[in-house]
Amino acid sequence: MIGHNHHIRLNEKQEIIKVFSDAFEQPIAGDICIKENGARCFQEDWPELSNLIHFPSMCYWFTYVDGHIIKRTQEELNVLPEMIEYQRIQFNNNILQNMKNISIELLPDILDYMAKQAGCPQAIKDKDKAYKDEKKKLK
Image (cartoon, rainbow, N blue to C red; front, side):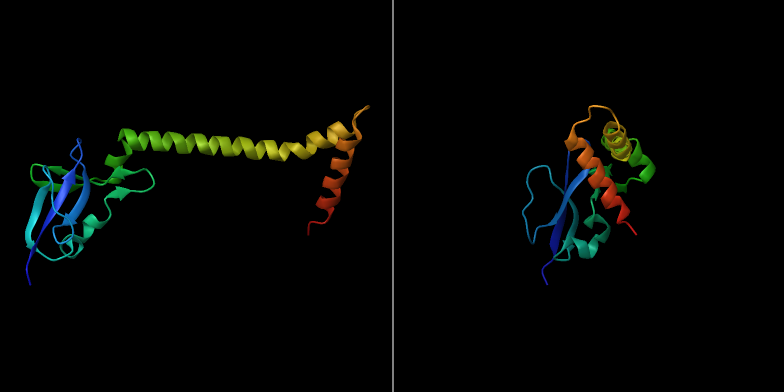
């Protein structure tokens, strides 16, 4: 069996963004050989590098520092700008969903109130009645 070299590719922050074997892809300038004469697939020698990205934040788990592959802890990931932005978006999405739920819960009360007002259009009264008729069907 002919051994294969395993390589990593880094981004500007020294995060490992790609791992591959030269059995499937040839390295380009800047790629770093992390193992010579390895298995055909890098996963056989480096199974932990099969999952480079923390989903769904898209932060990279691994960095390459002074010749060493270092896996970040969740605590380290939590302070990365990408993770902070992801958490902010998640927080805002939760707030927006809560606002939507509150609005939806208010609609029957608003419809009922409007239907009881003098001069309310018949279409609104019909919708209010249809809503109440459907609600009665719930078990």
